Image (cartoon, rainbow, N blue to C red; front, top):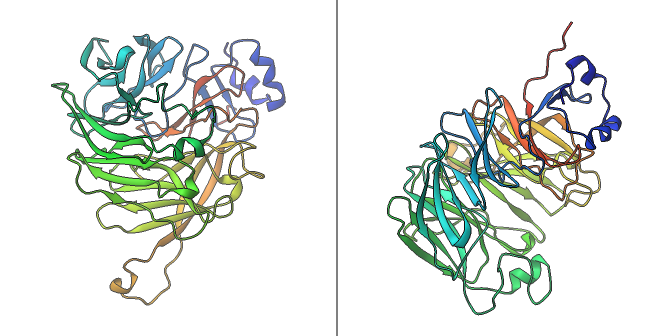
Length: 410
């Protein structure tokens, strides 16, 4: 259902529930922010990928997302939607080099699908005793996939559900100390290699967008009990802790690579629910940059534009770690460094954290959004739109908001 821009400009958020019984609009101007929002999906129950899963083709023309029936693509220029995969498809990741997406289907089968022709190729079937975790990474040269798995230790069930002896809690799953390991899959041969065995909860596996041998993963669990973010090489060497906690109740997580592969970014709170930062770790030097945010700007997830000049956040709900007072918005952040007035030499400054602040801009009002569904923001490759998923108008759909403020028609 389309509405003219003039009509949509008169809408208030109180009037949006009227759309819930019908098909949500395909385009409108957010009356609180002046930014244009478009609906990219056509089928209720569609979702964009998790915030650090690449969903865009290298050319930036198409994006992959999930539907109730499998996977689909949307042309980011025409907004035409096409089905891509019918049936079960999890751990979805799009190549940054070739026009294919990788995913796990039924029976632990790993597939590659061509985004244009839809031709699908079976890469391998993982052993049934490998209970694969919640993320897949693809190497910068498109030769390897990487993930984590729980070894079959006789406990049965699906180990990545937060359920241990009937106790559905992050703490119980973390304390279970189930045997895990990382693994890679050779995209051409299907060869599976396992390494870095551990009883830590290994999760959120990612691969560098530029370094084909660098893997990032996390130690999952209650964030105040773990040093969460780590890197390792695909041959199992070079294990590196990215952030070490230095105070009680300090937390960091929801880590992701900058798109140039030079920096790892992560949510940082010193301590939890009190002081908010987006932390950055420079891979080559170990240098650190922290950007401060106000409580109402904290977001469940952050992301960064391809040129590194802008950041985005998806806000948080009434039960988030920043509550009370967290803002339910899609945010755009303009980073600004604190002026360095010291007389220190470069040698004296080595090891000191560079600090800055985020100047925020609200893009979409998510006051009607239920944050049990995380919006998961990402920039389109041209940096002109921020994609997110939302139930703000009733059914879950994939949306995009324009970074530039809309120009009103005369």
